[in-house]
Image (cartoon, rainbow, N blue to C red):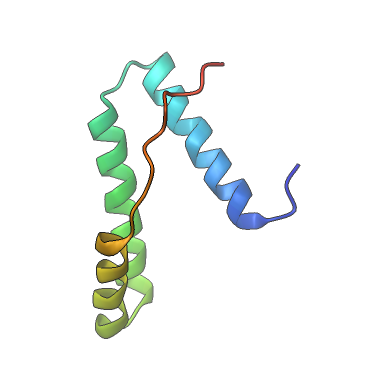
Length: 73
């Protein structure tokens, strides 16, 4: 078990997302969109307007690597 709470949160959300994809056959776009909406609402709730706008900029400017393929259980 990870000692890093961010790693635990990430892994739990990833595992649940894969469960929704594989076991419930839900569309990837619906799952990703829901996670983005939750994240944005959490940021909007906890940050000042200025910091929220800065966070949006960071999100838009950050390069990420795609998953090679979903992990199969």
